Length: 266
Ligand SMILES: O=C(O)CCC(=O)C(=O)O
Ligand SMILES: [Fe+2]
Image (cartoon, rainbow, N blue to C red; front, side, top):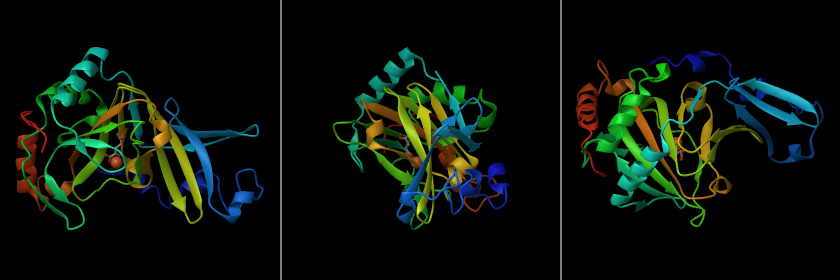
């Protein structure tokens, strides 16, 4: 999979956002002494990150985000949650709970093996099939499904991060269930940070790819969890695990297992 968005040379969200030593209105800000944050909102209809402050409208192209609203029906949402709640949820970091269907990985040492992975769950078969209706998701063959459970009582959140790209491929696909949330995309340059909020409605699907996958970190802030929220993130293999890659054999084994849809959590 090529990374078309990354090819734009000298990409700087600061330049894109019009930032330089001065703020967007051309005045120095008090916060410039410390950490300053510029807040934008992603607009799915235009693909722009937009900001309105003091009557001044500013925007910059924000490629690499695809939102598919109403991807899951209300009935399917009930079935998916019922099915997930039959399995145990394991405590994870930052007040999250987790269920993983995927290989055992040590990202630091770049080691991966099948472990107890037995494939994606049966309930995901029709969801993964539906994804292929989207041109951007042609050839998307996930080998991992990670379910996360967030709750306001536990203060659940996920800190800004980039997903691994040694094992995981170009497209990160997440289905959002039970409540609306916001994915906060951020990019730092020294003391400056640009944030772009992406609304992520209940029962929709979000794809992050290109710059939104590799350049911008993503996070879910604690204040954006108002009720129980469950998400399922699907990940595909990177080129190293696909035909002609160094780990092709393992990749092919993982794909066969994943897409038999007979798995239980690892
Ligand atoms: O909760 C989400 O929507 C994102 C989860 C995430 O970023 C991750 O598991 O790497
Ligand atoms: Fe992530």
